[in-house]
Image 1 (cartoon, one colour):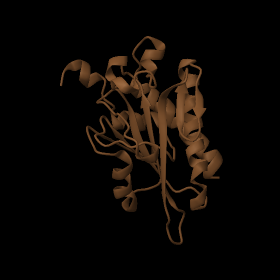
Image 2: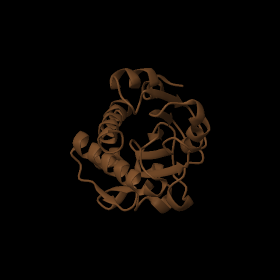
Image 3: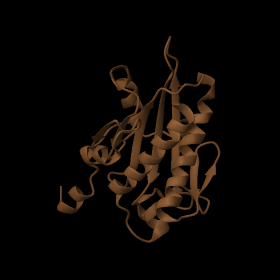
Image 4: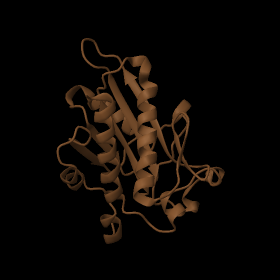
Length: 205
């Protein structure tokens, strides 16, 4: 791995150190490559506390809504899933999807002053092109809060050529919108802080 590639890697210890005492981000794992972060977190859920965040530098089987494939090229975006135990009924999972989408949209606006919109139920757009998406999956748990996994994918440093040709007129990255590369580590911290704050307000009183 070249020095440039190394400097652009997400570092779990540094992410966690910059968050302080939080629910979301109390434990952070960064893996180089994995099939799906949602699937991996589900496998880890039994032995993990609420707030675990798993990042993958690359997903080989990332999923969006309705089983659509989510393109997740190496070290180009933020691909991560969060383990949650919200105090809601299992048929209210749409609340979590809306929360995550709105918070990611708000984070992009605050950090980069870009105008974003949420296309229901789970897409975040810039100028009508998808920059991020959310996939929430819930599992019923007896005698304890239900388990939820919030998967989030944000296109950060892709060029237009990094997207499959069929997606180039429908997808965008922060780098394309800004005309410059983005510090993924710094932006990841901002997103996690915002997610933690809004999650506490809505689901963990």
